[in-house]
Image (cartoon, rainbow, N blue to C red; front, side, top):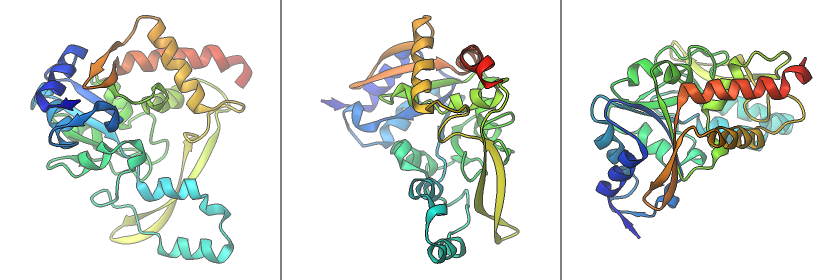
Length: 273
């Protein structure tokens, strides 16, 4: 089936998108169908609906960092690991590739004229539109999914979360809920990455709550993310529809986070203590 920019825009409007909104996008491009003009038309159709007063945001992370996690660099033989540490390029928000496992559109939006990227090597987002500067500025290095992060700001500015064919367990905003949930003994990890300081590559370390596995022992983030999202939908929250050939969901960011925090406390509050 052929999908046009106009059809995409109409699908967004029917789902509930409107001018001036700030939207965090998750997408599975292949699920949308054959798009006339290619992936750029998805972003352009969103801009058509949101207008110049709205904003699109995507979690992009960093391709090299994500690859290092998958390859488990810390388990390399000493000589290989040392070579990696010596040669791995520093994170540069202007040039570091987006992680395309999170969708083809991560790199498309990163390179879109006027797009801004937050200065965080592992939790970085790209935003385009009226609120882009606000969302991407002053991204805290430690606990980069928590207070003061673009995810926090998305909630504070009345933002939305849009899934286009993406599974329910891919909602990155739930990491923000993990970070602010008042649970004791949440699992903390220390990340080590190279960045530029005064034009010089240096390795730095910073803490965050575990976003790769789970914040509490004995759980799997992919599994409980989906459980949270399904429970949220069962309460009647969120909007469900189709855009192109893809199933689509639209959620209020702050309301979703409040629900997720309460869910985590109810499930794990006593056990974590």
